[in-house]
Length: 294
Image (cartoon, rainbow, N blue to C red; front, side, top):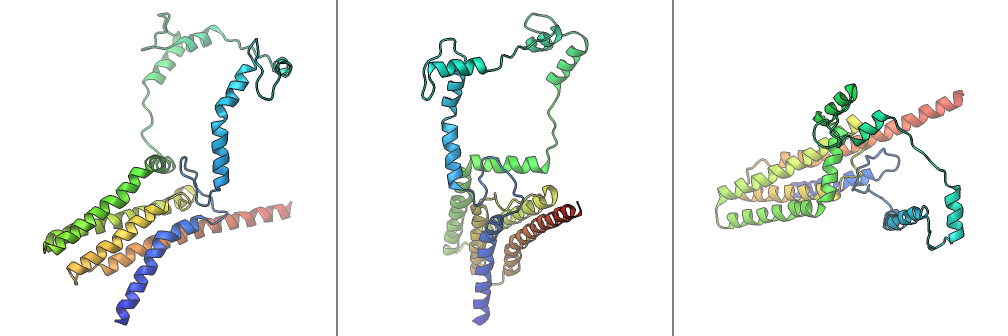
């Protein structure tokens, strides 16, 4: 009885750590966090987000006022009189752009092939360069940093659908598997529960590998930008599916697999945060030593 209670406590502690510790470590100040567009970092200020939103909302009015400065018949606007607008227009630098014949041909080049709208092909090397630019294929190789940014940006743009996939679909599968168990379809129930267990384990291992690779290859922490639901959902369904497997077959060796899977994100997160924090500390020491020598 005591042994089972200790196992249950250990399982609960590892589950809480695997689902919460990565984001807690991601909030450590001084870590070089990865900047992913569309996803705010952990601990980001709500006030700064609101200020940015106000600036973006007022951007159109700002651009319109700047354009109206060049109007020959300026209209009065909020904060600027006709006289002030005239003074600003007179003080603005007058820029004149000059171009040669080749530059004008390059600017007019368009349409299909190397032919310009005038029906003339670009001369010599310029035509060859334009043909190469139009027919070249984009690079197929993508760095890990770009691949990571694309994935997280995609998640940020489809966060509602991803949350639906992370919670509703596994929940429906768990309920159906439990119904199969109640209907004494033990083989089908164990097969479906095993699929849920394998998918949850794969997602936890994949997230842990992404954190480790980001630290190793880019020297930046992913802990601050990975949403907590990405850790919480697979941990919950890993534990639930392990319990169903234990219920259907008491001899199923789920314990070691569950403990190893839950311990992995904890270990990788601690190593990643410690590695980057240590690198920042050593860099600071090196800078201080260099400053003292000078």
